[in-house]
Amino acid sequence: MEDHKIVQRNIALQREWYGEPLGDRVRRLVVAFDVSQAYLAEVLGISAPMLSQVMSGRRAKIGNPVVLARMIMLERKCLIPDVAAGRKEALLAALEDVKDARPTVGRDNIPVAADDGPALAALREIAEDEDLTEAAKLLDDDYPAIADLLRRAGLQG
Image 1: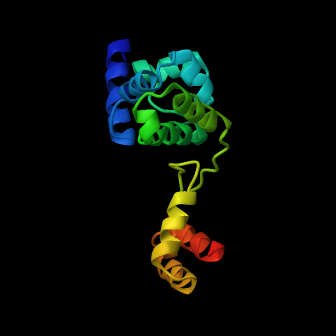
Image 2: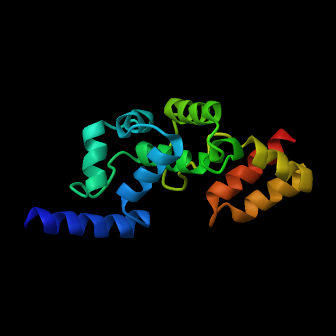
């Protein structure tokens, strides 16, 4: 298969697997955090050449699920008001937080935020500990990640 056809096939696979080409996602992060592609690769835990190959479509996927988890974490960090405003200290803190993260990725979860404290606090404000624990039991089979969040909120109350 010619190189051009391989790249087109890989980009189509990226759209299917990741919702859009990874090059688009990575470029948004480079712009949002005002960093080089090489530094972003370091933050994500992937080599710069590998990130370049994924971005250009020469490779279809990110093989390491932890790298993808970090990318998602960084995308979510863009929603933090100080990060969205481009405040340098917030940008640096977000990058360091993701770089230092050691997310565990399993069949039922892929982390989207490094700090779930605000979510736990909000759940504790609207429900009693027993209710959170009971809700977790009801959701366990179909929504294990949500059940885990509810259970942790109930235990910390």
